[in-house]
Structures are given as C-alpha cells and as structure tokens.
Length: 457
RNA sequence: GGUCCCUUCGUCUAAUGGUUAGGACUCAGCCCUUUCACGGCUGCAAUAGGGGUUCGAAUCCCCUAGGGAUCACCA
Image (cartoon, rainbow, N blue to C red; front, side, top):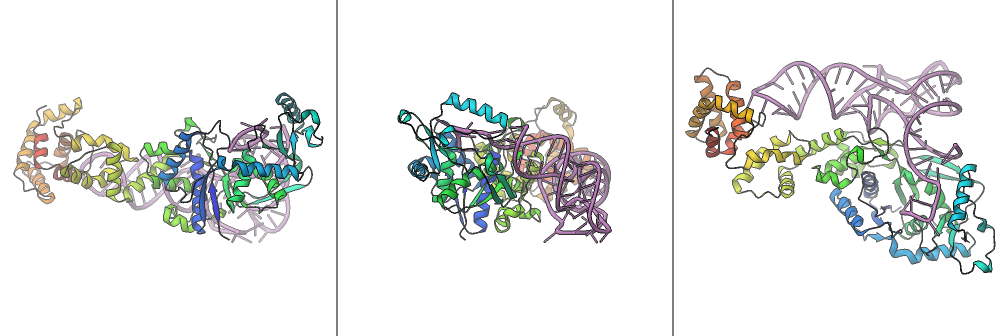
C-alpha cells in the first residue's frame, strides 16, 4: 500500500509543541514507507482562523524541516464538496434536518448531561413540516443507536464503544458551512489518506467520523492516536510550564535538530540514543513503538540534547546560526577568532543564544573588565600582568611559544600556573572562567592581549 | 457525572511469563584540570495499592486509587 499521511492543524494560533510532534510522527511514518506526507490547514471555522496563524504554522514546520513538499490543502477551499456530501447523506437517509433553536438545544443538553446519554433531536424522527420550510436548520448525522463500533488503533489498541453513546453530530451548520467532523472525513478521503495520525484528543471523534465513512462506503483508514504532552506536573501543557509555542524554542536558541529529536523521544522509543537522530529515525520509525501514556515535557532533557547537538554540528553551521541571530558583522580576524574558539565555547552553553555573554571580550576592541571586585584584583596584580605582557610582546606568536613563554615566567619566579592564570583570565575576558588561556591569548593576538594586560584600572 | 484511555526511578523510557528490573536526563561524589565546562568513573532512585491465575507476574485477569481525554452550529 502506498502510505499517505497528513498533518492537519487548525490555524487558530501558533504551532504548539504537541502539534509539532504529531507532524513529526506523520512525517516520519510517511518517509519510512516512502509515502506522501501532506499538510492540510483546517480552516472550516473562519471566525477563529487567521492568516498569521497559518504563517506561524508554516514557520514552525519549516524550521523543523518537516513541511510538506506537496501542495498545501486549505480545507475551506473544498467547502463545496463537503456540502455536497452532507446533502448526499441527507438524501440517502443517513442524515436529517434539525430545526432546533439554541435555547431548546440548551435545555436538551442539560437533560442529557443528567441522564448520561447524548442529545436526541426530536427532528430525527419528525417529518419536515411546511411551517419550517424557510427556517434555519442544521444537518445532523443519524448515528446508529444500537450495536457497537470497534476501532483497531495502531497505538491505542482495540477499543470498542457502544453506539448509543454517539450523538447525532452536526455536519452542516445553519449558515450552510460544513463542520470539522464532516470536512475532515471528506478531505481525508479525497486526499487518499491511508493513516490518520493525530492527537489522542481526537480519539472520540474517530468513532463518530467512522460512521460517515461507513454510510458512504469509503475505505476506512488506519488510525493512530498518539498521547498528548503534559507539563512536568502532569497537567496539560500550558504557558506556566514555559513556552508552548514551538517557534519560541527557536527564539530561545534551541536548534531544529535537537527539538526534533527531543519531541520524537517523547512517546516513541528506539534502541539507542543515536536512533533519535533524524536520519536514523526515518529508517527506524514505527507506530507500534509509540507509547500509549502521555509524556511530560522536561526542559532539562531538551537542554541536554540541545547542547549535544551544538557540539556535534559543523562549526560553520553553528557559526552561521549565531551570526545571523545577532546580526554580527565581523572582520576576517574576528571571524577566525570566533570559529576557532567556538567549539570550546559551545561546551559551556545549553542554548547558543547564551553565547551573547561572550561577545564583549571576544570582539570589543577597547575591552576592559567592568566588574568592580575583579578590577580590584587586577590593580593588586598590576606588576605581574605588565611583566607577562612585556614577555608576550617579544614572543613569536604560536600556541607553543605562548605556552613556553608563560611557563618560563612561572619557572623564573617560582610560581605555579594557578598564581597567574586567574589574573590573566580576568584581564583578558573580564570573567573568572573561560576556555583555555593559551588558546585565548593566541586567538586574541599580541596587540589586543598586551593592551588588555596593561590597561590602567 | 457518563464514556474511553493511561499508570516502571523526579523525568523520558527498556525489559514480547523466568533479568541482581537495564539505559538516558537530573542530582550527589570522585578523577582529569590554569578556571568554568567537556569527558571518564561511582552512587541515589521505580514496577501506584490490593487480590487472584501460575512452579514462577512489571508482564495475564479483577477491584481500588490517582491522572488524562471527551461529552459544541470549535477543531
């Protein structure tokens, strides 16, 4: 079978983390089976849909590199075919016009809640009366009232429900627009979707939507309802757990690869950590290995994965990311300095935006330490710094020679590296910790180094 | 409340009736070391509770508890 999957977000806001993971699963599953992965924007509710939201969704998908390479489907453009199906169901007697007014409906809703049974519209049995001919109506699907429906969900397993709990859902609104329940089914059929992979919050819908498919004699797709993502406290993921918008993580300095990898291992398990790498995952992914229980979003783990990726990525790629983000314009010398020091710098951060703190000493020409307490230390060691400065001034510039130069000073003055290291570090970087001093001195170059060592505090 | 689903270290998870219940993250300690990191090593830490079935249960069955989803002219 040729696999066709789809990611079908509704454009009512940004692309959130759960949606992104659903997209990843759809993408991976199609890729694994050399099938098609499609994206469909579910904008049946025009009031709640927006252009910005659509843009945000594409932005998120593009960032993760999982946008569809096929034409994006906009559900609202298929309205006519949805409406046609609604009337087809009506004609065949699988649906009926319901003239219930909203207050009448509200009364029924309260009653049905008390009885624990779905709303029964009196219009299911009634014949259309003349007096209602010109009144507003909705079209409801006639759900089977007895028997059971079973779905063999790839993730959730075999689940059976009694048909009596199914309500006669609205498939066409009074303004003649189709509801999601209808549109989704019709589009899935038109698009030839073979596997519906979506959030677990849609599981109940599957039992209702499948009735439409049966009435129309269409092919029933495979279902895979994946569990939702929760916050660390087990509650539904929300703002107070941190960012819920996928793209916020881009802004925070996470890499696309790390995000992909983390989202993937939230619910899907592989044999080795390496299997979560995109390339391997596209070969290994199976829906059968998706867990049934919801996973909790843990920023610490994301941080760990992100720093791993930061350190295995090509230096040039990370470099580009940072330069672009901070709009750095660096000369040749600064570029070389940054790239050389970058691997060491990256070992110290979780997100690449944290590197911003290093820009001052890395690129500022007239850099000096601004911390008052540290300045005091430099003042007390003025002589030492000056001496080392003059030694370095005479040094023929190479890592080897700089090292020898420092060692010579230590030896001649009966010191250890600990006696000069901290001072040099503060003078050169304004901080008490940094990468290896010899590399820093080498990359900063003779002039800058000596200037900083001689700065008058 | 009705219906459905879920429950292995704090977190992500492995273990298709027989394992000292494994790994990763976090945390703690040690080693490496010019600092901070990286890395290496060690450690803390789990089968929600109770009943069955079985020679043997994290695994199969039942009950209880906790959590979640859903119950729209939203998707």
